[in-house]
Length: 145
Image 1 (cartoon, rainbow, N blue to C red):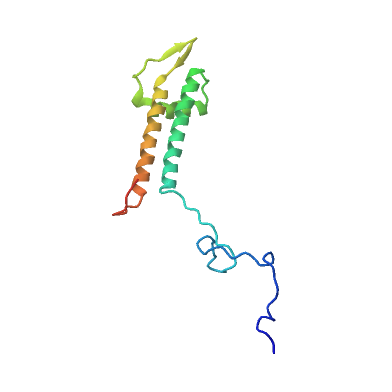
Image 2: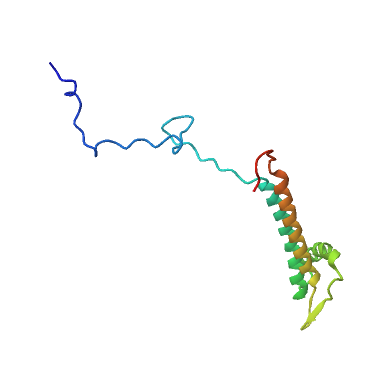
């Protein structure tokens, strides 16, 4: 008569594979239980809206900075510089007259463009924050940090 334990293989602890990780620690694909699930990356709320706001202020700041530099170095008149002078002048117009134009070594420095850059950048920061606040979901009863 055969003993019930005779058919069991004699294995050592080194031959036994480790147990699988708990279900919470491993990602399982919904398609195949052996394939790892794809990692889902989420973007913050209002990511594109904030990027558009910062892109707009970058363009505005570029016009103002180029206008400041072109006036300071007394750049010649060409089609490109006339566009920069026109657009940059229109953007700096609300700040014209706050500071006097400084002339150093025959090169004028119009500080209204620098002030306009600071104000427009601060305004873009406020708009980006408002976009973030407006796009965040409202959860009743959940503590906000």
